[in-house]
Length: 60
Image: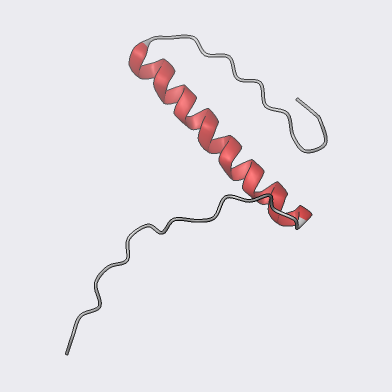
């Protein structure tokens, strides 16, 4: 029985998401991930960070 090698993380094509619902889901996930990373950076390095993010509807 042969074991299939692990594919690992795959490269995805970076393109604009056309479906509005998928766009909102991706935005919220990436936004929360960005805030999490910024919080970790503040904690680990003792720096202050300001993040301004504008949504698809131009809201900050």
